[in-house]
Image (cartoon, rainbow, N blue to C red; front, side, top):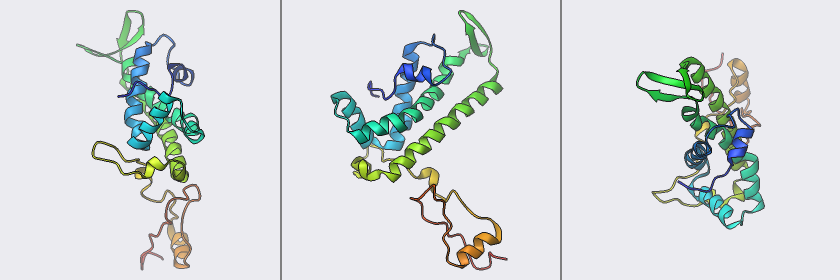
Length: 205
């Protein structure tokens, strides 16, 4: 894992409800782990390493800076929070999971509330990850690393796994009649996807 982080501890605390007293090393570890797993999964190893090298050598391009500041930072903020939740709120003990209430005090963890918190944070991480992936698809020519061949130890960019099917499907006769007339069914929010062609003979009423 890298020691070059795409967001700071300050940013993570600023845009989430993480208490200012949470240990800085805990937060850094969460950023490092989530960045290495979740962000590298989207970007692919080639682009991921190119951004790290650009930060280290202070040679980031304008396009790379936009990618980092406007898209990666938001996704990483909530992925890092998601990865930090266990260490922040839950501590395993012989008698089960407990939640710190300040100082040496603690109480039994409410797993229902905790699960709800995790789902809320993850939904935000997924949302910003979708924006990041969509931006890369629409601007892939700006980042040649996305098209470079990877070796066995590297990850290819994962930009389309969530969008393998059209996100917009008309129901009932409206869909069938439109396709019967040769009209493609697609969503303008996803211009990089092929139109939906689900019509088969006999499907229409």
